[in-house]
Length: 221
Image 1 (cartoon, rainbow, N blue to C red):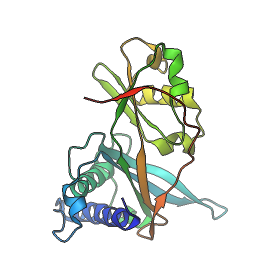
Image 2 (image 1 turned 60 degrees about the vertical axis):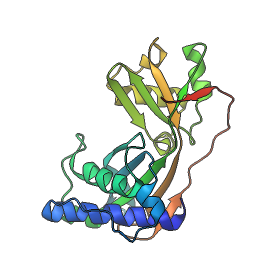
Image 3 (image 1 turned 120 degrees about the vertical axis):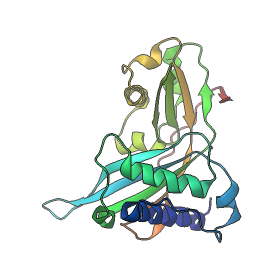
Image 4 (image 1 turned 120 degrees about the horizontal axis):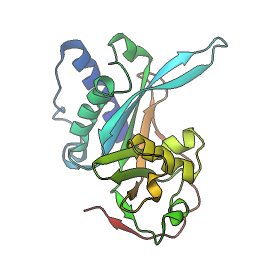
């Protein structure tokens, strides 16, 4: 995606959230959007972060909601609209965002690559197969699933093992579930766009790219 396309998606996500919080209506994508955004399907997540200012006048970004679609089930524009509304109103970790809060919330969109299943000879190989700062994780065991975006491990300064453990916890599993037979571990990448300030300029977010290891993966079916 170009930075301009990322900006369009961010502004669309913000407009959709504002409209929903105002009148309870889910907007349709405008017909004048670039065709790519109306037709191409990718996994997509919207992250909302609230700006808070401490006693020293320093800005802090605090998570306020994050929901999306791991698989490419909707065209990009529709995915951005729905994920933004869900992140603002249906993230079970937080109360719904209020309309007034939008003035202090930064919107971030992560457009996901295909999800790939890691194949390891033994569980202890998994940490060597993950690239912190490049890969996101999806853990799956039975009906439990947990996803963490690539930027999360960087923001919290996690190593590969901690990243795996936290993804298990996100899935509602014990932190060592990644080592158990039958647990599936997927990786993906993301292109990220975000506002520098609430309703401000949109840029592409670059995260640290770690050393690329050699590993085998296969497309998720």
